[in-house]
Image (cartoon, rainbow, N blue to C red):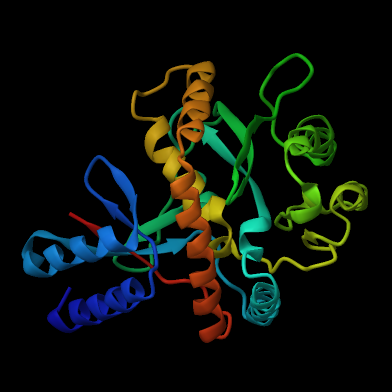
Amino acid sequence: MNRCTKRAVFDVAQSLINGKEYKSVSTERHHYLLSSLDLKKDFQSIQQEGKNCQVIYSQFGLAIHQNDHQARRRFVEWAQNEIVVVPDFHKRILFSDEAHFWLNGYVNKQNCRIWSEANPQVYVETPLHPEKLTVWCALWAGGIIGPYFFKNDEGHNVTVNGDRYRAMITNFFIPELNNHDVQELWFQQDGATCHTARATIDLLKDTFGERLISRFGPVNWPPRSCDLTPLDYFLWGYAKSLVYADKPKTLDHLEDNIRRVIADIRPQMLEKVIENWTSRLDYIRASHGSPMPEIIFKM
């Protein structure tokens, strides 16, 4: 990387730091999510020891389509208008998502970032019959509901479909909400087919009414917006950086690790993650719907 390119990258990083953006810092063996204050200090040390570091771009696995920008702008404008009326509105949204955790440590590109100095033209090898867990969580400023592991009646791990998703909502999610004032909460889900069947939308509207953010819902969730979903830009990456540390050999071991890692996430960390969401709204509105630029520093 030449001097001009490094300067440009550092300028972008500094501007993001000043905007209180949260970033990832990686070493050869560990991946950490740091607050803006931690990153600012680390960034200064990187500038002083530039010869010992490498700047790497991070991109989400999903590409933004040209027509998505307008939908993203509309959603951001709507959310920011809600925050003007109710200043803690962003703290009342239950963001939800699923992810696959593979026993062999393979990471699904849809729920991760690709690290590269250029556009990565890569092939990912996967086993013919991989063992994996399909995990669902809902995250908000008040905590995390889940993890929920999709299993069939015999207790075998399965992937999610519409019937299983509705069963999860009925038998797990709604009972978990009994400890919260659901009249104050909104629910968000992405546009996956299993989420957006009419029966599913009707089921969610029975609980949340018009406080539903979803494709085909009262408030539309913009497609390919994983940079606006705290589970994608924080939870799944954070969990996957820890659950494989002791190299689990069985799905039961992997499931125990996932439960432990998620249970150990402190409220203070979630508060930072949700506050970070409002910074992302600011960026996307200012950039007319463009995706968030993600930058890490690999030491």
